[in-house]
Length: 128
Image 1: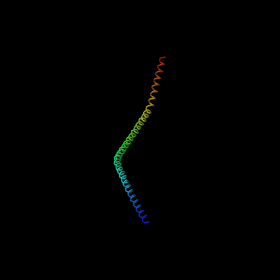
Image 2: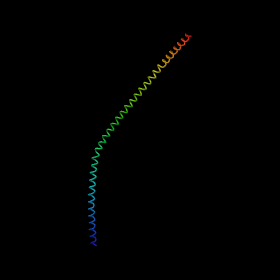
Image 3: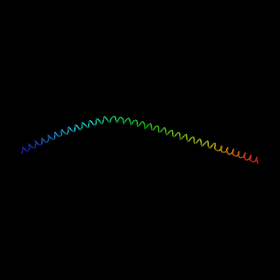
Image 4: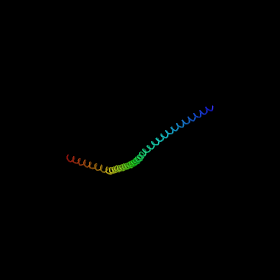
């Protein structure tokens, strides 16, 4: 029975040795894979830094452009408001002038027309 025990111990140690060798091989592969991942991450990092810097520059430019557009829009709004006020003032002045001049002009035209009619009537009567 002792020989079976020794043989089983030998088999057990051989299996453990094979398992240890297999684990060493697997760990070596894992180390290689991790080295490749590290290399890829360094490459990605080195490539993304310029892109991020460009994005920062572009974002700053877009912000500047948006602020300029806002300023221009405000200027256009102010100009439109000024033009509206000027137009309103011109319309108000036109109404004032029309209100002040319309009555006297109509009276003058009516007076001239009546004088003309009177002269015409007088001349027609004198000719007969």
